[in-house]
Length: 149
Image 1 (tube, rainbow, N blue to C red):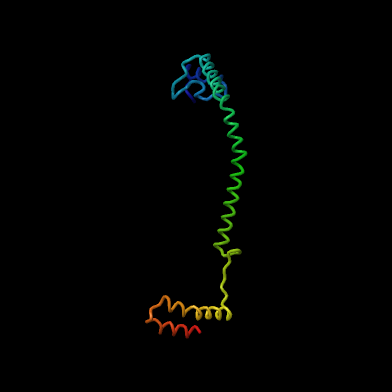
Image 2: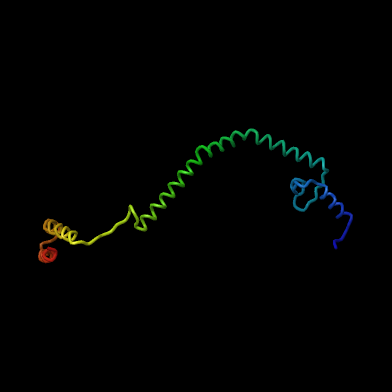
């Protein structure tokens, strides 16, 4: 059972009679200090804070409205556009990495493809041999061309 003292009971009575919505900073308590002023002094401090709120908020209200209009007119469409672009980029990346359409790539080795490849080799190897390879490699390139043809 708690110890009952006159001072403790008076503090409990004061706490019970104060309004529910005020916290310790509104009551004038700082740290562990007790509010030494009267309730009239506390009411004047609260009134001063309310007046300062109006003095600061009324001139800044158009700025808040302008910011809200900017966010709703410009910010939301830009956000929607950016999120759509991000989703599209992500989808295209998944298609590319997984090799799905339109990024699918396949090589089919058929007789026609081999014939075309060998013909292209035979057509261009003579020009490449004359332009890029030294004369000592003529024998090796002739053997490769014979195998390809």
